[in-house]
Length: 433
Image (tube, helix red, strand yellow):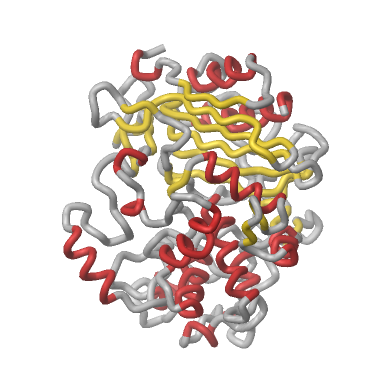
């Protein structure tokens, strides 16, 4: 094992057997069938209470020696951000400021319709459930100064020939699409009168006692952990150096900000028109959080909207988040089950049931057990993450892998559509909980 990856392990174990530490360390070090990792955070929960917290590896390589990864470091957690964002969205629904089933055009102030189905409204429920008929196309984010509506109007600079619309009508077909969340964040800004990142901090994260944020500039330098790959312009290079993919240098608060020009960023933020570009703070993937933070989100779900006496959401709203809005029907082929993969690819069967930004997993389908798990998965910039809860028992696991030395898809397949390293960690939890 290389010196910089020497099992720098910060561990708080409450009920998991000590031998489990060694099992996680072996996965981190790449001693099995998967490649070594740059960093790994794992937090576990038993019957709604924290049961273990682990951190291996390094957070940054800009210092000498490399900064060890701790349980407190914040990492860009990728698509788990969607589930957390949905909590804030449902608060606004509870307050009567947003309606899950109304035409979102009424709030946006411009018409968002699939041109092939121009008489069919697109609703927030469909956006949250990935049944809106919107598609990511070549990109789903816009830098500061551009408008979200330019994706969807024929005269818009980012219309891309209408490729952001699917051939299926709204409500008919599941296709995982990040662009839905730029629209949802815009709705939240208009309804709340607050910028998306600010709303989420003030109304969701801070009330839960979390210092996580959708704005990378809110995270102190000493708590920022980068995402890594051993990959260069010509592909993966397992014998090469770790290369930071995001958050390895000066923070970029939002898309389009120059990291070395905070004054210009501040000036832009002062002039930003709420709701004009909800993609700015990456609602689909930009939450910076630790596995411990994600465990609090799982506690919130297990506690039906309440954690430690603090109520953030009603039990009714939590139930609505978890209720399946879409379930795959093989006879009608009513959705793409591969997530962001291509139909027929190795991730076939990854998503077969989905609530309101909540992934519902039947472990029997994956050959991993009989339980139903709810939560979300994430993948971006080298990070692989998951936050999963057994709602029947209150047991849960939050995992953030900061990077892999080799393409995780190259490892020997397991029984599930997950990357093998993710499956091995999930199996570890199921065996030790």
